Image 1 (cartoon, one colour):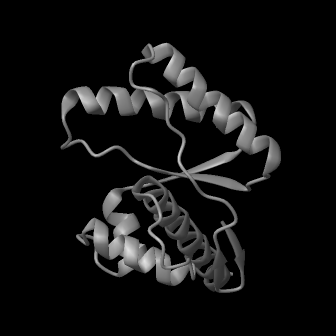
Image 2 (tube, helix red, strand yellow):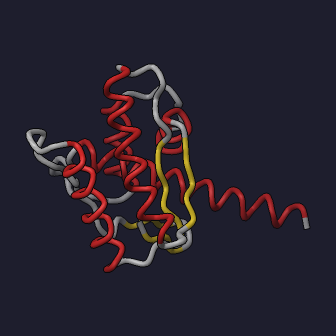
Image 3 (cartoon, one colour):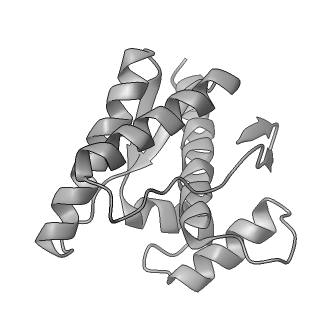
Length: 149
């Protein structure tokens, strides 16, 4: 995501995925390698990530936590700042409603980033929403800092 003033632009987005038939260690390694490759071609000032939702299936929560750990390890090795946001924070930043459904979030992501009408993959929409939240929070933090001076 690139921000110029109030305008946000999706520079690159997509989905990283591994075959579910591969062993877990191989899938985690592939995700880490894919992120490493992406970070070789981009220079983010911050990596935004959504916190895990504790109400999910325990097995899914464990696998998601392992994937997050692999990705955060790559980011940490590169000493890139990380900002983490709850699902409600992300929804609120994008739609103005912390309880918005996925369709509302996807619609607003498409509108805010002026993306084509074609359907953006759901995982990519979620990631773009987290990036929008990060950009808006950063703007708010800068404004609050300026007001304190």
